[in-house]
Each structure stands twice: as C-alpha cells, then as structure tokens.
Image (tube, rainbow, N blue to C red; front, side, top):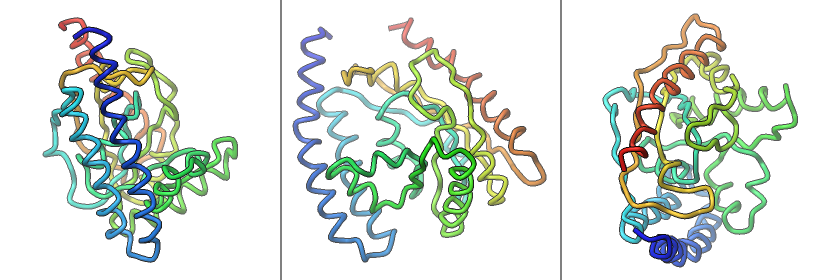
Length: 243
C-alpha cells in the first residue's frame, strides 16, 4: 500500500472517530450517577466502534492467542505499550477494566471527561511513594469490585524493539490485593505508527500463563512478567521482516 493511500485511510478513520469521541464523552457525563457497569458498557461502545472502523478503513485487524489463560476473577494486566491501539482494543479483548495513567489525560477536553467516568487510577508520576500508595489503595478497591486493572509497567510507549525499565507498581498492587498477574505481549507498534499512521495487517496479541502472587515478593513477580513479555517480543516483531 502506498504512503498516500495509508495516510488517507488513517484520516478517514479519524474523521468519524473524533466527533464520536465528543458524543460518547457527553453521554458519559450524563451517566455520571449510573453504576460503573452501566457507564462502562455505554462508553466502551465508542471503543468497539473505533476498533471496527479501524478494520473497515485501514484493513487493520487483530488476533488473540492464549485467551484460555484468563482467570475467572479480576486480575492485574501487565502489558507492553507501543501505541494508542492497545488502549482501545484491550477494552474489547478483556473484561471490564480500569487503567493506571497519568492524571494529565483527564484534563483533555471531551476525551478526558469521558475517561474520568471510567474511574481510571490517575496518578502524578512525579509523586514517587505517594503515587504507589494511591495505586495500591485505588487498585485494591477496583479489584474488590471485580474490575480488572491494566498497567503498562514501562510507564510510557516504547517503539518496537525497544525495552524500557519495568516499574514494579503493578506487581506491588497484585501482591497486595492477592490477585494474579496476566502478562500480555503484542506487536501493535508495527501497525499503529508513532506519527499516527496505520498499516494494514493483523496485530497479534499474546496472553501469557497466569503469574500467581501468593507468598511472593513484587520484584520477583515483576521480573517474571518482564521475562515472559520480552521473551515473546522477538517472535512478534519478526513479522515485520517477513512482510
């Protein structure tokens, strides 16, 4: 596919997703008094539309491997973060969830307003120890309600092939809450480019075996998740060379 065609498809995707963001954000605000499950079900219709429209306009789909590893109860997801795609698609792939994110995102007009209705754990990344305490307190409260928690342990997006430092906050939460960790690797960065462009293809999402946390130290849990995720990445990124 030529660069100009890919760029046109990306703009076509955005042309409908942008106004729909405003619509669903306002709808979410109207539902502020509704239970979380109701707000989540309504607002994430936007996510499902965005993922579907991505398939239609950009010929970009995804495939999930390892879904049999998902537990019946709530868990902490530790995942690679390469693009905005996973923040959308994870809502389609996994049970109702909240994300650990930087609080500045909640200040974005419309998008941030709707995001706030999904009860994310919005932290000040410069707060150090206070941010960890907030993560544990709010994360346990969400998990106790049966809501999954998604953590990107590298803290920010990393380009395909890069390996950031895995922070232990997600593992600390899982150990304190007594829930397992679900490690997730994917190659979305090969298809959703850093400049916002989209490449056609099929993103692979690989869900790893559960990492139990009972009686374990957070650093050991975090290291196991990191080893599994990073061990998957060479095979996932090798698809770029075969295209």
